[in-house]
Amino acid sequence: MAKLVRKTSTAVAETRTLPLARNLRDVTRACDADVPLTATDPRFQDFTAARGDDAVRGIYRELLHRPHGNFVHSVFLGHRGGGKTTEILRLIHRLGDGYSTAYLEATSEMNLFDIEVEDFLLSIVFVVERHLREVEGKPLPKDVIENVSRWFEEVVKTTQWARSFQGEASAGLELSAPIPFVSKLFGAVKALFKYDSHHRIEVRQVLRRYPGSLLQAVNSVLTAANKVLGERSLLVVVDNLDRYSPEIIDKLLVVEADRIRRLECNLVLTPPVSLLLQPKSIPLDKAYSCHDLCMVQLRAPDQRYTDFSGTGRDLMERALSLRLDLDTVMPDRAARDRLIAASGGAIRELIDLTHEAALLADNDPVIALTDVERAISKRRRRIRDLVNANGWIKALREIQHTKQISSDPAGLAALYCQLVFKYNGDGWYDIHPLAAELSEMRDDRLTRG
Image (tube, rainbow, N blue to C red; front, side, top):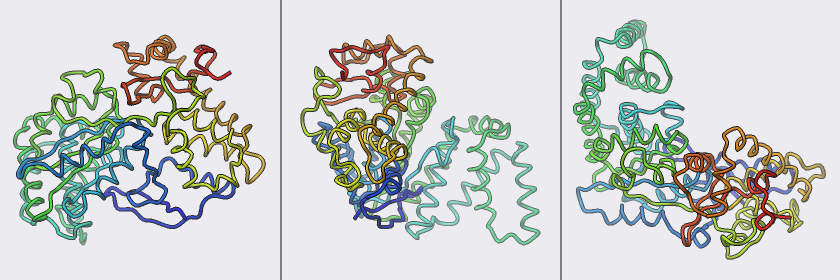
């Protein structure tokens, strides 16, 4: 039996039991790559042996061995779709009762396209306050929250947004509204920074005049949170930062590293992997401890994209078998091999391609090799459009030949868009197997056929 787990903003999940998929409808449901597996989901497959590293263990030991009174500020890097969120949720579970973890999904809690340090710091306040109140059942002292609220009101009181909010809040209080003023303020500020508006720009500009006092206000909440937790330590995880452009996250985490590193809590952050390779300001590993999660290695660098060596292929098949009754829905080993090789070792890619093949299949309950090829053809067409529209052919050919990243911005852009993968061992790179199949890229020594 497998369990379907839905992640929430506090990394607490609602679980319901599902059997292994034995028909096409259930395959599409079981292969929902947008739902990361939680820590105890029986569908989890440990890929450590095929990744050649154990990045999560490095972070775990940092947190476990940190000196009393010090805080760990780490970044967890890897390709989108490589399994970072699931690994983070397993880390949280592994830490056990020693840590209380407030989980912040950046793309849900903050603006989808842009984050600045003011947004980031206030979002940490909101998620920590909510985590202690809703998850731990230990609300922060009322005076701490009210002090931060009064500070914020005082700083922004001259803005049009503040005048508008105070008028609306007063009207609500007069009518009946049972929601406390502080809760209304927190909700309004969160909404302000999440959506683009001239009010957002105005308030940001005011807050930038008080960088020190903003950090002090945030740390007052974090210090109070640590006191409330007693023997346990506060950990804040900010996930999905890799979905923002490297330029935005460099400005947030590297340019503003002095302020981020002064936060009085443990932090695990997930910036784009390309930021480690080509810093926009100072190197990322000069500001934070860095831990890389490599792709599952399916083959050696000098092998064809359809070849297999090592444990990677079998581990990827086992990951599918924890979701699907493979003997029923995909009895043809050639279909399985084609899917696995086409994924390049990216678990999300494997799940997505399987989902698409199930949608295109004609003979329920079986996904045949022809169905797999149709799904792959659809994905390959999208890759071709992306590559050609951005002029990445030359950069991809270079990476395919050298197995390394160069200073070419096009190669780093392709890496960010998941058309280049990093593997462990000697630390090599290669292009997405389906990019290698493009007629523009074809090299018969390396591609299938």
